[in-house]
Amino acid sequence: MNRFFYTALIRLLSPALLGWMALRARRAGGDWEVCSGPRFGHYPQYSPLGKPVWVHAVSLGETRAAQPLIQALLDQGESVLLTHMTVTGRLEGQRAFASAIAQGRLAQQWLPYDFPGSVRRFMNHYRPRAGILIEREVWPNLLAAARRFQVPMMLVSARFSDHALRQSLRIGSVMREAYGQFDAVYAQTLHDAQRLEQAGAVAVRVSGNFKFDVSLPAEKIQRGRDFSPGLGRKVIVIASTREGEDELFIRAIGKQLKRARGQGRNLSERVLFCLIPRHPERFDEAARELADAGLSYVRRSQLIEAGDCSSKALQACADAAVLLGDTLGEMPWYYAVGQVAIVAGSFQPLGGQNLIEACAVGVPVLVGPHTRNFEQAVVDALDEGAALRVHDADAALQTALQLLDDAQRLGRMGEAGAHWVQKHRGAVARVVAGLNEIKK
Image (tube, rainbow, N blue to C red):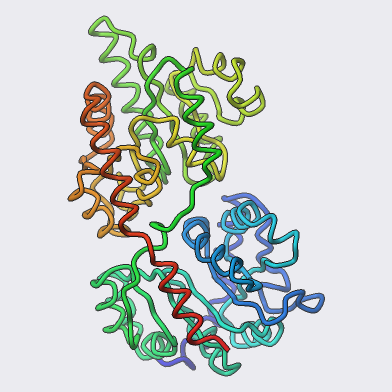
């Protein structure tokens, strides 16, 4: 398929694609502005930025991954245009860069749909000095418009699985042409680089993963560590659960509590389970599932209302078996409260979630069997002794409980994780150096 037929196909399918976007927006909540002017490259006023560096971070994960890069760009005096496709990504950008937005140094916008007119108007309106796409957002008409407007383009912290390669090759010349239009490509691993070159990218370099360069908020980590001793219990953090996983872990928590009661023990007096759905639209659903399972719980938002680390907040946790994480941007706090982190997204065939933040905080990590999106990082963490792999939710909780009884092993795993993260830093510096070589 060439770009002409690709464009004809997305125009033909556009009603269905827009309907799918609207359905996704309704399920997720928030104002996605699915049919708004900016989604089609129409803007009500002139751009407040003068020839910005444009960074595209499609959703929440990519926005978090891009934060150290964006901060590095701001630190060297660049103005930044940050684009997204989802509300969660946009909200995270607003939270992380509120100061730069207020100062007029960073602006956010929706990325337009990949219609030729839409992306052409986007380029003409913002006139970026350079464009940076995070991880795997490759749109043929967008890249063609960038070439037409002589905007140098980079694909950075790129990951490219065997499955993605097969898909790209099946689609044909349109994707090979798109990958070939990047002025620079920085892959997370050597295997990613090799697959990207097979897909059509040229001069691919290995820079590493941006997530190792994350700068976690020390104040949130300290507040979590200050809060933890007052609980009088150990905390097992079940982080970033995705579709179908909340039910698995809620059922597994119930089994552990029942097993302990059968042995004459009250596990809730010793352990607090902290369940954190990845997407905010599932906070209420997880609360309903906890209630249906007969598990007492308290929401993190209730603790904040009670005074965060206050005695009232600690008291609110006293009668709960589960702390439900229903806030955004607080993962460092959750990890700092916990003694073990189970990083979900890997207990259903969903590809896994980022375990690097937990390791950076110094928390031992458990992952499930499905980690293709972070496979190299997981393998490295396993080799370093910072993480363990388990086969299901029941095994994850059982292993976590065993680790809580082995203080020496907990300490070794936490130290190994922090050391592993520290020695892999530097991806952002390598990409910024490459950007400075190609930008206009």
